[in-house]
Image 1 (cartoon, rainbow, N blue to C red):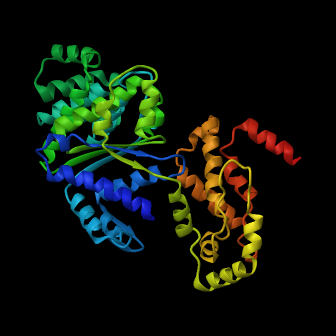
Image 2 (tube, rainbow, N blue to C red; image 1 turned 90 degrees about the vertical axis):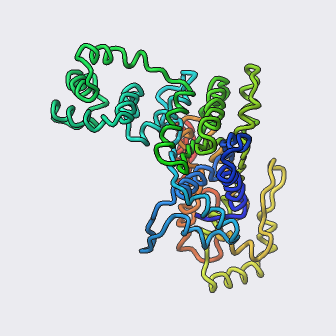
Image 3 (cartoon, helix red, strand yellow; image 1 turned 135 degrees about the horizontal axis):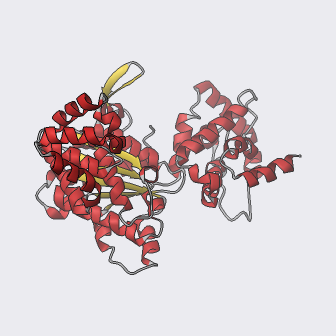
Length: 444
């Protein structure tokens, strides 16, 4: 992970807000602001950013190149500000559960007004070891565990069915007798009461934001007063679109979590657009008061494409000193020619040229404008839809494209720059079939 100047600022801003709630647990004005909105267009690295945050916040032990240490310690050499690093160490010192998920891949159906709430409950149940796909079954498990009877239920179910409850709970309808026998044994209820519960459980189960937040609070309380839970939700903006009800659903979750959990539960979301742009889409359909969500998501981080340049330069284009000297000499001889050849006009956007020899060395074998241009190409493919909708890992796709294009000229001498057509093999798999057919016909 490369901590660019921009990412350094975002880490600083996030941990400032996070520590503020740690240091002021009794101030509702501070503990209510538990939302973080991370925006950035395709390829800006927002999914990668929240993945790195998840590693930091969990702060579990990892091994790298034979060395084992906690996640935060791997960052000591990457973060040059000792005060910021000390703040991060303090923030991740308390026990934290992190739930990182792409909301679109976790959602069953987007049609309901409570779609976001249903996904939040699903991932919470999953993290706690309860049934993720049947909330009323998870509710039963939560109740039994609160009474200290869940283990008894598991044992009796396995005795009666010959299979473990975890393996069979998704097919609970096919094990009705075994479920009721285990329920009666664990709770002491009669067979008649168990049958009534079994018939009505799904229908009478009530999911509200308040219920959900209460379950989060109960979980946090059971883990101790310093325990925290962070929901890291990828691609929320895309999931919401212009749906006012979904935006209100997210607003209520953030609002109630802040109230119930007093800064111990956080919601961090990513979106291609900033919060005001997403709200603008929602407000254009109906007039609702979204001032609360703007207050809850007080911390806003906007990632730009500048990040991609630095990441590729550091991860793919680092060079040995002797090669740097050769490249500097090439630029000294041919720099003026390169500047003239890579000068574009009337193209609707500014294409960066090589500034000087240092710029040539860090970007070689690519031209500076290619970082921006390739990103724009991937962005356009995604907007068109079809196969492009699967481009959910923007920065990863762009890194792969540059790596693939660079390898194609690996055996050439140093007087070669990578032309744009070398990127086509990486782009081709994301193109719609009709578009690909047209290009294939052009080859012939």
